[in-house]
Image 1 (tube, helix red, strand yellow):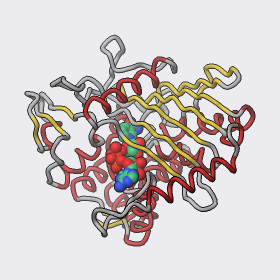
Image 2 (cartoon, protein in one colour):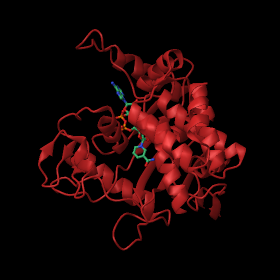
Image 3 (cartoon, rainbow, N blue to C red):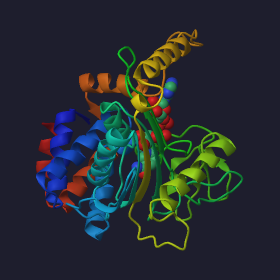
Image 4 (cartoon, helix red, strand yellow):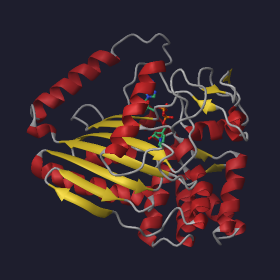
Length: 356
Ligand code: NAD
């Protein structure tokens, strides 16, 4: 099924509204999920709606929740997301952080107990639009573990994404590194299963700890595990990300001393920096421009695949998908229609909205 961004936004907006959200929250969530598809990250796009609806019906996702200020102390801002839609509560927390960073030059924002914040790069884009640098460390819990530690054979944590965002200069578009610390995001295993293809080697192990390319091992009764990216280095980054996201925020890490209800909780530590308060904006631009030009001038090994910097693939995907539409595989589409039914929108109406 090929859909337009507009049609998918209408469909997701209607589903979120039918789940009890006010119009503004429904529009925000719809924009966020469809934007992830446009950026090329189908793992975090409209295919998340069946999970969101399941969590709504279980009371593990609470519509119309505002981020609650836990502490406001100079550069330190702490929020609790109260299982609200991640995009809504994280947007509020980052918005407050941007204001504080403009005043003080730095701000450190924690957000505990948000429901799924989705594509973390979106929060980096918010700080980029304010011409700030930001670093985001996110853990995932309330959920079964998915990723095995380096040298381990079973899952002990989830995909703990990291995002580092630098604003655009006059010449260079913004640089946005935004990635799971697992070899691939779990949503990409779901997409591989739904589209019926194998994952790359080095990404998964089966329930016995043996390498496999079969995405179904993550859906068996006794599951296999994703591997961290980059061996011990990616594993090390996953460990500190879990702890930075939780130990400072008051949000739970995934160890068994904390409850797990079977939803998704994201905790996030965000560090915001105003380049104007450090070496200055002129120096910042000079270094970004000079370095990016130099790196991109490396002759490509494959002439069809030039050197890129983080953020380029998402920009290219956006151009392509805005022009050509967004492909939603048949299983994901069916799951979305079933979720639309659960939430009371009805399959026929959902189908019509998605195709509009
Ligand atoms: P990925 O493996 O596609 O990596 C994406 C990053 O690599 C981007 O910064 C991209 O610009 C960069 N990149 C890709 N190709 C490049 C190239 N040739 N040159 C330079 N840079 C390049 O992404 P992923 O790890 O699958 O993560 C996908 C999304 O999942 C992210 O948006 C992440 O925030 C999200 N995520 C969210 C959660 C959550 O719980 N909320 C958990 C895990 C992941």
